[in-house]
Length: 486
Image (cartoon, rainbow, N blue to C red; front, side):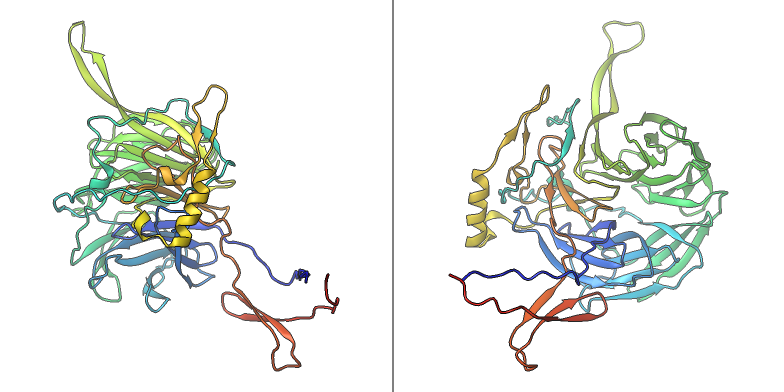
């Protein structure tokens, strides 16, 4: 008997853009918050059948989330820690992953909060042994645009193993969180084991809006970026300004404001900025001197993230590109002495990947927590079938691109995760960024939950139940009797 499809236009499927990402304290989960206020938790697995959408919390759709942070203060033994979000309305919420609730821990300040940054841990434990690496399932896709004109991603001797750096986490009793506010001030609160944030202090206001904030690696300095094109460095304890740096118009600057959308502080003391002109600039974190500037984006640069070894920096922007910059070493002649050379390090542009079709708003790093051994029989069969389809695509003048997800997504090895306005979430190889295709984590984001109920008490009528954020639609399914098929 042939089945006749039933079509309905009564169900709206309009996935919401992802506005922020954050990785749990144990690096095994990725939180993604969408523009409609919903929060998704994804378990990071190496196999294409292993990425697991663990849960969704439907938050306040009228409150637009601006940033997301995950820390382990007061987590009461939970390895993932506590998850906080800031909003444009000036409030801060904590997401209860057990009761699936969004609760306010800081009432609205009356001004927008653009970004949050949790103070890093001063004392780090000894490095753990690298975890064993296993292959996951392959995933094929050939829709993405690449450029690897200067791919220098071969492993260098001075590189620190990413897998060794990922798990340098430590639970602290209290942590400070800095808020970049729309009135130009940076406010500092204390995260404790209580249900509310405790006010600590405010840094002096500036003329523009404070749009981005980050801490130095030792938590002694706070760097903030504002809409007046200035990066300010202040003493975290005293609040005194140490230096300020002016972000030059190196890209597409033409508007009345020069907005610094993201700041990143590295362990080596370098500070990285991303702004509305399409520029990514590297600064000396001690004195504010400009080290290097790159203008490879064709629009606003929205996000920055570094690999755990911090010798690679990734940026994303409104042009849909995710770009890699790598710390490179070269020998230069010292003065007039031809026999004397000195080692110089600089950040070089490696290449880009354009998997997203719209703005890429958020970046984060995550670590797969599963292995091939833990896959089910069905998953292994799917892995075997996908492995047969692995192919290489050759382009003129370029190296072949490998689209096998299983070749780079190894157990315990960090991966880059991106998300944006196209509602998609992609995972990339952090080590071999331009060689492999990104993995589409959710090919059908925010699928509408539906359930068909047949032969009900109401005259044997069939009903289609459609779940929305705060309501349930019940649709009556009336299928004409077409008789029996051949």
